[in-house]
Image (cartoon, rainbow, N blue to C red; front, side):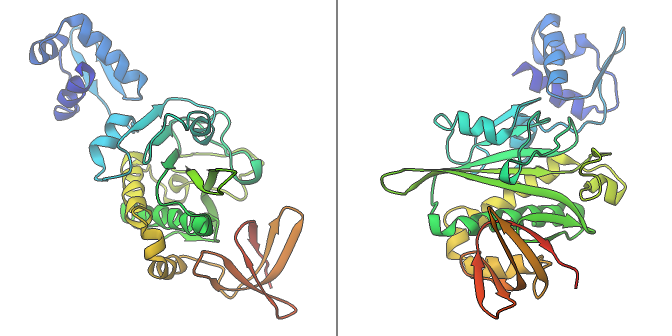
Length: 323
């Protein structure tokens, strides 16, 4: 496509101004086609500066378009089709509406969410050009008794992606990801189940990661932060997205999250910050308090209550209780 040929030329000559005439001759199209291509690239988030009688120049950018992601990932199942949106209500909501036309491994990614969602219908602050907001569609090798493993595998993939890309090790409290005591990421796993058979037809895994956020609304500012705020520098979202997707495929695809559950849980537990800690877990109208013993083979949280009895939990919001 013309716009991506333009992008390749501007990228090779980054920082220089390239005339529209030069682009026209190199690509073999009209000046009008060049102008339309530039405008299309700008709409996709590319920072292109244009000066009369000088030309166009690709400035520093943080584009997470379909083209950029597909060009930089080395996956077999994940990301064959990527749906990119400048703005959307929620990537998970879109996936639920369009699930019939979506295939296994498809990715929905947005630069902004107007109605970002978290667990238990909470909202997820999703400002433009700041975070990573994406959903992964799975339609193969999904089993009801291993759904929590799939969620833990996703969290592990995100943490490994962060560590690989940025060189800093995050931690998890079972459901969310933290860095230096502040929440930076959460996931939302939703599925469709066939009523008659109980078979899971598909799973939508939503990821919300605070990457380059500079600030947060007052109602969440005490609990959450971003990689940029904590590290004091901009994060390359494209590189981080690609690392997460590659780690996700290694851990979760082709039944690996089931076949390699022991190894996965052992690796995941290295990032877990609640082992031998007192916690409170809320799920619907229940509150369970106790000491975390371990994560079991199905991804359940094993808690020893004050009575000495063990309870295994697969859902709920969790928080540490300071002793």
